[in-house]
Length: 107
Image (cartoon, rainbow, N blue to C red; front, top):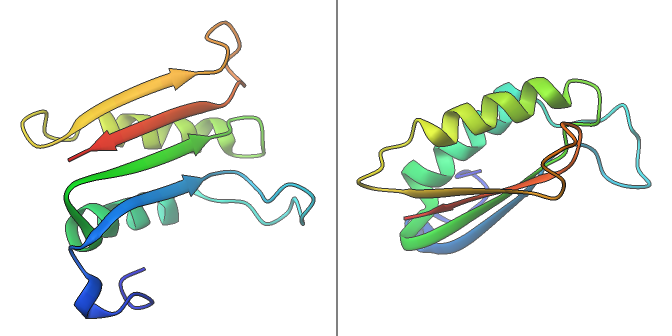
């Protein structure tokens, strides 16, 4: 992401939103993947996000590879420094493991 955002804006982005899975109505063969999602999250926190910025991540485990990606993203978020970041997770249906979740990271 940093190569698509001018260097003059690095460290100034106040909010970043991730919508994982596939584009509704789009090609369901094109999905987000753990490796690229985690790399993008690292870039956001380490290069782009402003102090007091926020990252929202909607996780949809119901697509192919979605459970793996959801677990990887949740594990990564929970491993962030509690002194630097506040992480919260809300599930649309805690009784359904395939239900979407919202992860929020606040600096």
